[in-house]
Structures are given as structure tokens and as C-alpha cells.
Image (cartoon, rainbow, N blue to C red; front, top):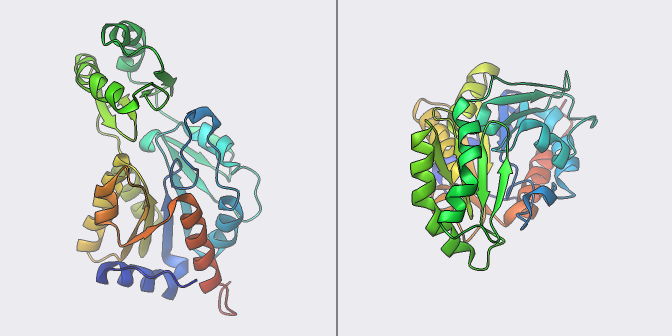
Length: 280
């Protein structure tokens, strides 16, 4: 297929990955990147080609990690990542890195929840009622974060816009922050984001290059982390799982692909490139 980055930095990142795949970390968001966006987040599932492509690629690189705002265990279930040949060393960093699932052990490690999450959960029904946004709004309890989805409302964008200010005030009262996304507002503890999770994981693995693919505003922090790593001399490739809903990510990406199907094609292309006789 030969997907090629449009930037010099991206071409250097891809060249480093293909020249020394054993030193490369491939990190990917879940929703909108490995799984198509759907109206009901509980019905999200990985693209049917995602696990086979990852299973082909993972043995040829240093590490594959999924970095998601979902709880790690939920991403593992919805992704179908457990017990897959080739993904024996997969890592899922859930809740923006607050949780970690390792395929090696099949267990999730996580700190105690921030007390503000329970307080926000108790106050949220009243806030939604006062904002007139209860109908069609769906609240997702992530355990260590709360997500308010408006995609199923009569006017999803209007509901999103009406809720943003009151939810930011609610979050601030309880020591949380609001992470905006594609018709979703997530209330979660500060100091945890995909950029911090990715940078820490790259350091942990001793990676010599990194690829990151995402689609939403929450992925901007990971893009920034890769840009900082590149400034320090570590090659990186930024991939946007193309969406008209988040143009800022596409503008900063080295390579824009056509949603999860494009991400799967890219992963398969990389596996093909690395499957020569020299690949282990």
C-alpha cells in the first residue's frame, strides 16, 4: 500500500521504525482509531481487521500499546485483545494512563479513585436537569472518571455547548478537570493525560522511535508528547484517524488516514514492510 507521511519529521519517524522495528513503540487510541465511533459507546467494538493487523505487527516491534480514556478492562473487552496469539505482550493504558492492563498477566493495576469523581457523580443529575440537557444525554461511569455524551440528544452540538460551562464549574468545585471530546465531556482528575502516559511508556520501554495514532482532542496531548520527544532527537510518526470533527489533529499529523479502516490498513502495511526474511 505504501502509505507515506507528508512531513519530513514523519518520514524520519517512519524510516526509523522500519529500519529498527525492534526499537519501536506503536501506540494507538481506541475509540475512533481502532474502533469506529458509534452513538452508544457501550456498543463500540474494534474494527474487525484491527486485532489481526496488530497481531501481525506486534511481534516485529518493541511494544504495542493502546492508550485510551476508557477503563483498561473495558477497552480489552471491546477490543477483543485478551488471549490473542501475537499480542502476548500488549499493554493497555486506560483512563489516560491511570490504569494499566498487561496481556502477560491479564490483570489491571490502578490507584484508588479520586474522591471528586464520586462527588461529581452524585451532583451530576441535578446539573443536567438544571441545564435542560437530561433528555438524550448519556452518562458513562468510568470508575475513575465520568463522561457525559450528547451524541444521542436531539441537537447533539447544542446540548454539548449548553453543558460545557456548568460541567467545568462542577468539575472545578470537586478538584477535577473537563476533557472535551467528540460530543463528549469527560470529568476526571488533573495531571493524567495521554501525553504523560505515552512519554512515560516510551521511557519505560527504552524505545528508539514511536508511532502514535489518534482521532480526538484527548489525543492532542499525545501528539505534543511525540513532538517533544522528536525535539529531543527521538524519531516519531503522528497519525490522525481522519475525522472532520477534529481538524486540529489532522493539521498536526504527519499522516492522515480514513478512520479506523485506514488505521488497520496502515498497521497491515507496516506489518508487510517488516515481514521480510530479516524480520524475526
